[in-house]
Image (cartoon, rainbow, N blue to C red; front, side, top):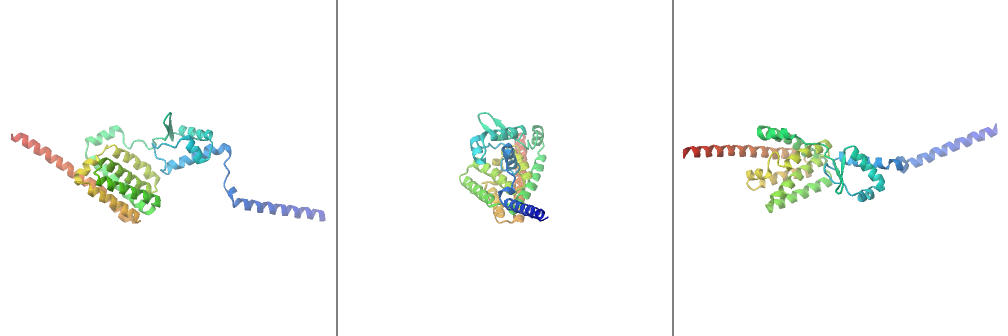
Length: 282
């Protein structure tokens, strides 16, 4: 009987020691699941997928070289290639031989060529586009004021400084590109990934001059000063964390764009009528 009690006590002590050891280990790195060799490629895929979803890797963006990626992620190049092949199979990246690996076009075109042609022939539809942007830009600015990180704020400040210099140098091309980058940076600062991906498609159309040419808009302003000040006001409100002011500034900016185009179209109609009257009076 005594021997049996000794065995039972020994077993109890052994169990207690094992449980203590497990608890001690669980407080350290073993609380995380180890990545076996067979899971390395999956881990790489998951990381790149997350960066795409979070808007860090945007469509069309070129990934670093295989060597750079492998070193940065601490994986072998064969495992990295396996992961890239999986991402390509899933349609998330495209490998262009001799050029590199790029994030695929994921959101598609905001509008088909046929619909764009309709918009060009029916001017009033253009104002629906501006109305859509007014709502989205205001929403993005509000969220940016509430959520922008220090990195987001530094990026916004840098772009505004570039816009100021471009205005001073009368550099229209740099000013136009900086304009789009600023709006993109504000959307990114909203931390809303759906908004990021949807607006990226809209800004691509703007970059292509599908809806309007910013240079034309600038002529309505005279010097482009008003546009610059509007962008500054948006950024200042975001940096100050004033959500209401940021949203109001973004909406006011889009109202200015719409008002400028309406005035421009009306002026063009006046010019056309005046030209016809002159022709008939000769």
